[in-house]
Amino acid sequence: MTRTPLARNLFLLSIGLLATACSGPSRKADVPFNFVDHLDEAETVFDALQFRSVRKDGLLSSPVTLAGETRTSLTPPLPSRLTYQVDVPPDPVLSFSFGATPLGDGPLAAAVDFLVHVDPPINEDPLFSGTLQRYQSNQWMARAVDLSPWSGQRVALTFETKTRTAEAAQQPILAAWGDPVLASSPAQLGKLAKPNLILISIDCLRSDHLGTYGYERNTSPNLDRFAEDGVVFETAVSTSSWTLPTHMSMMTGLMPSFHGATKWEKLDRSVPYLPEILADHGYQTTGVASWVYVSQVYGFERGFDVYRVLEDPTARDVIDAAIEQLRMKTGQNHFLFMHLLDPHWPYLPPNDFLERFGPRPRDISDLQDLILRAEPPPSETERDEIIRLYDGEIAFTDQELGRFFEQLKVLGLYDHSLIIVTADHGEAFYEHGHWQHSQTLYEEIIRIPMIVKWPGDSLKGRIRAQVSQVDVFASVLQGAGIEPPTTEPFNLRELADSERRVSEERVVISEVTWRSPKETSMKVSFRTERMKFLTTLAGPVGDDLGVSETRQEELYDLVADPDERTNLAAERSEELASFQGRVRSFIDGARAQRSTRQGQQIELDEELLERLRALGYVDH
Image (tube, helix red, strand yellow):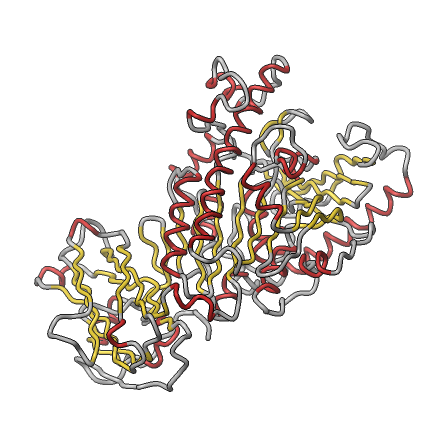
């Protein structure tokens, strides 16, 4: 059953309190019951006409965002009662959050009471009672309630919201029950038929700065140990050079030019989206992210039961939030997406990591300004100081990931989970005249880690054949036993399980598009295991694919010249022509896909734009 909000049993022809009852069919008690999914079975009691005057769409459920955290919620009016007939499972826990926000300016006009009742009751008290005071608006309160006295019984659970003062009528209030679920406690974990799914993306993480990929510094002991439990894909390639398009490629299995999500436009609703597919197949879906380019601003919350974007977090904050969610959801099939930002510029690891790989730099602020001004390093000393700071950020992130993996084991989730650790893109240290990850697609930018541990087996090793971020989409769905809607991305499990090696003819593509006041530019990389073709294209401002004019072409032999120093474009005309044909086919396919889609336009406020400019994102 899908999680798209539905209006059921609402605006009948009477005025006043409405009630429609449906006891609902009996179902397996050990299957988590997601209340938002079953609104058509609920008995509803509220003033329908008053609700319709406030909520024009008439929906009793919707995603609600409070303090940067989005939860799929029951959103009945005030006052209201929603009653469900449910089968209580063994070791039962009812988990939910509650929150309220004024539909207008200012604080809440009145305190809001949230109550849960169970019938038959044990006494006169409600099962749960909580009050949001006027000053507590725009925040979620998470709760878990034990239903053990009713284990094995069929009961009526009622969610009630109300206010106690007349002032509430003067200001519409949105009261929300966030992600309410009835499920068995962790003791029932072994009954899960499907594995849990965990996707971890570490921003700006180059594969060649991890020990398991041959780095000489000890930046990643925990990730290296994790890699021993799974498969290391030695040649993983990102689809772009920055956060938004690469994460959308993981979530859709499509190249950026095909999925169409950009700085200016959200993903079209017609594009299949990984969390939404998993939610439709019974998975609880949670995201914990660190950065605006994977936030609700760009539509990443779609399909998630809970999607939380932390403000200026460290890896420790993200890990803490993710562990909290896993503890609440154990006993349920769960997809967790986790995004960690620490290796991103500015490189400022915690104090105990500043000197992990050498003396503390003499002037960190000067080094940061050097990067922001896009100036070359005065000497190799300054460049190495910057890299040491970056490595310190990786080491801190690795420490926190070690704590995360340990908690998975404590919760009994580690062996039962498909876990993918990867990155959105790499980071440049002036190898080709650039810092950070701007409009370049050299190896330091597109080579990323891809480490996969499958549940419950001994599949381990290393795969040399190149793979792409788009392969994450099909691989996660395969782990959940779901047929992908597209056959184009590779399934990493099939590649690893059969020890099959992808043919050298597989071309892995990366791309990046940017705008100036006068034109749109696009750089595309086509990479085989030996050769790499880079082309820079330009077109008018209105053309998102920017392809009317070729500005530059580069061809590198990655075996003989892994640092991409010798451009062979002028002397290998036959290979160049072959890649040029691939570019034309790629652009034609992208245009055909984009012509059928129209995403929602993005609007950024000035405060957010200033933050992006400060981090060097003016031209993205």
